[in-house]
Image (cartoon, rainbow, N blue to C red):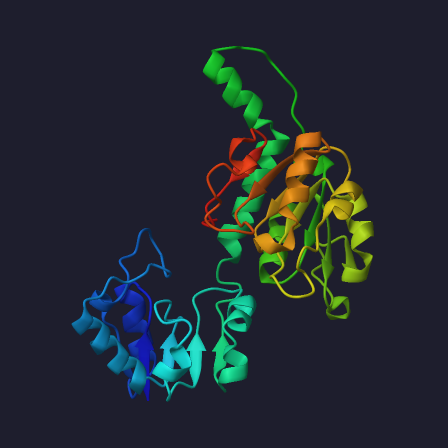
Length: 302
């Protein structure tokens, strides 16, 4: 059994994989992979010589398992890896990527994800954003720049309701941290019959999304992009949020109608947004979100 690691991986994790199954051959050739641009960068594109590309394709042809997608050979991967049986990815949301490249139709591969592995940092990003808006960080920043000393009053998170769309591992971690701040936590789950932790005050089905939105001061989107969630939050849904509500997206950009979000921010209906994901990434230069003072733009790095 041959395992080919197809994206940069820290050496200690490579050794953990080898130690877990000594009888398996694990190939890791960082010189054939993209150079990481930051810690835990698994999507860097390689710059191979023709000889290196030939070496890489030889490894692909003999691989039974891939750790991560081969982003340099997306379209022809089924032809280049005829022995492949399983891809373990380093990200959680891969459904649309797999669908776009028709891997399900073209192969019998098994796909497994890293669902939940990023729950803590994503939840911390969401809490950071809630605190920044509740404590009016923008006012503090502007006052400091002006060297202006004007006392003011901020909100407590305990006075607010957070509505979470998607109570998987990430959504539940957001809920847990929000509950620690004594926030009222409500949310939706695709299968509400599976229940939710006690710290979630009320659980709704996706069919009852309107009821969640009407109560929500901070809307946290933690759901993957699927056919069901495509543009789930459009102008109609945003209008149901109370005036001054804040939208936090740590799921996928395509879940929100981005033009409708911009309009709701410009009109003053929304108090702000903290966005780690966007419909188009990187966010194009000149996009109005860049210049909005009540928007936090994160480069899909939360």
